[in-house]
Structure formats: structure tokens, C-alpha cells
Length: 84
Picture 1 (cartoon, rainbow, N blue to C red):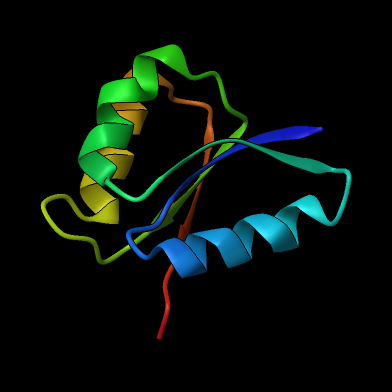
Picture 2: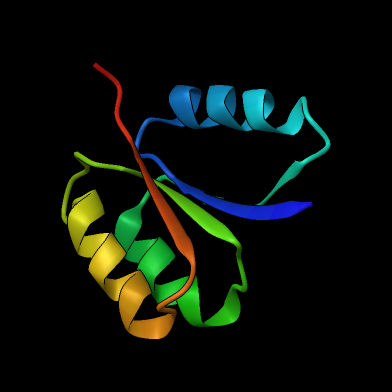
């Protein structure tokens, strides 16, 4: 089972993506955040297989969050998501 962390500033979108992912027993969302700043603070406590990051978020965008993740884990999968 893949351990997933999601970061999306819009709670309804976050909830939808979580429901979609967890329909299949291949994925388990171990943490979700609406604040990329809060997520960055918690990264040292989280061991995930993949991060799903919104690109456009206030205070810290998905690209900046990805840089912070990469500083801590060079091998974790990072997937960018966006709501158009």
C-alpha cells in the first residue's frame, strides 16, 4: 500500500482527492494539509511514499514545498495537482 501525503489549500478538493485515492486499496492518505507551511513543519515526522501537492497555494506554492521535501528525501515521489 502506498502511503500518501496530500497538500491542497481548498478543503473540498482535498476531501475529494482523498476519497478517490482511498477507493482503491493501493493508497492510504497518511496525512493531509490545507497549509503548505504547516505541512513543511511536519515533514520530519512523516515517512511517505508520495506527496500530492497543489501548485498554487498562499504563502508557499507547491514548487517551494517540493524543494523542502527534496531537502529531506531525495527518493520520494512528488506529484503536482491543480484545480483549473
